Image (cartoon, rainbow over the protein chains, first blue to last red):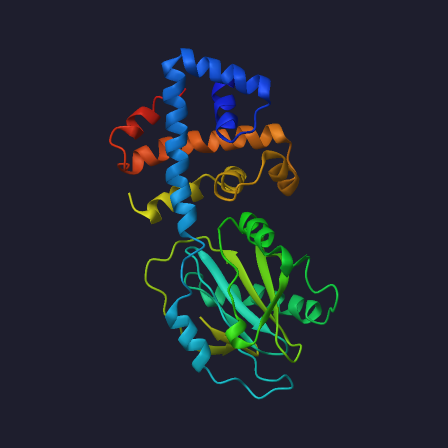
Length: 225
Length: 79
């Protein structure tokens, strides 16, 4: 990798100071090979951009939505609460709320493997959910930043699900680390003040079949997976 | 090459390279912002983004054809 090659990349991103940018432009004007390389870098960006752009708009899987909406809630100290999940390729996604509640897990990681660290997540949630002013690290009014920050941390783009139809208001997000990997935790609160967390973690394998969902109970939590 | 294959190539970059690339190219963050966000020097951001582009070019060229005939053959010749 040449120094000029790296500068070309920074030039493409508009990150060079005016003097250096002028030097690069002069080189581009006189060196056809340099222009070809810049074109190639732009083409790579276009391909990657097309992929990145496709991810945030992936719809929430209908089967998951239906399963969550139709799954009866356990009688417990906490009032009934709707849960939602959103899936992106190679993400483990689950949600949990208040006492008991639900965990929704996405597609690829065997449940027996994940149950232990999901229990840790539940423990974290029990503490964080009791926080008032300090429920989240980044507030909901910085939603774009949350998507970028947590997306970068877990290594996959996502969009914050809109759950207002379930009377859930997005409160913000925080970063957790579980099972040796970052977990993006999105916090919602219902009208009764119950906190619901939607968590996303990149899985180690790719999904090979379309997602389908079943409900079961493990360690006191209702899983929809 | 399918979108899934492209995503696979991006994933293979590893988070050290894919995160800066994603933040700058997909999200529009500046190098300085990425530097602060990831806690790495700006020069490192610059070099990682460029390395990611180079690796991606080679990786994609090995995985199939592009929408631009001949592009990946040219990409292999990147210095």
